Image 1 (tube, helix red, strand yellow):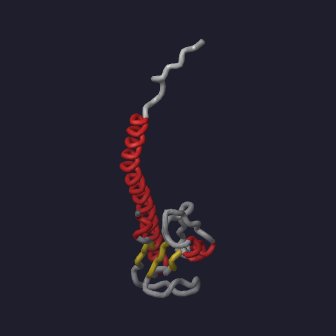
Image 2 (cartoon, rainbow, N blue to C red):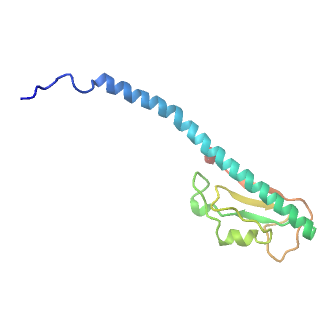
Image 3 (cartoon, rainbow, N blue to C red):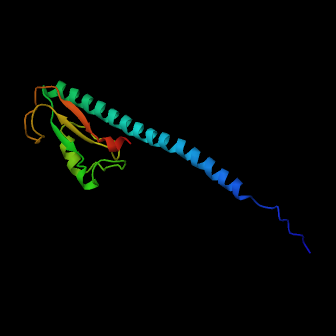
Length: 143
């Protein structure tokens, strides 16, 4: 008959110490991970705004004017801006078609180009003023 060892296993205090250590590691790691995600979303927005500005300069060189483009994609169906990605839909493609720019895949922010006029209609003449490219974001999206 096998003898049962009463000392086998972990004590309650050992398990509690392990849980506390895991909690401390999680408290350190989770905020750093969230900050890393926010930093990558900002880097994406910066790259897209620079690409829009480059496209605007190319368009200006060819046509002596700039293109207005509204805030696309529309973030309202997604419940506002947040940590989710938005698809670059048909309306977004149509809005930025004259400019010749489209992002690679889904985007974290909406983009708008204001060259001094109202949001673009394809047949409208280009504006002579330099555009202002913006990325729509909220403080909640950066947390």
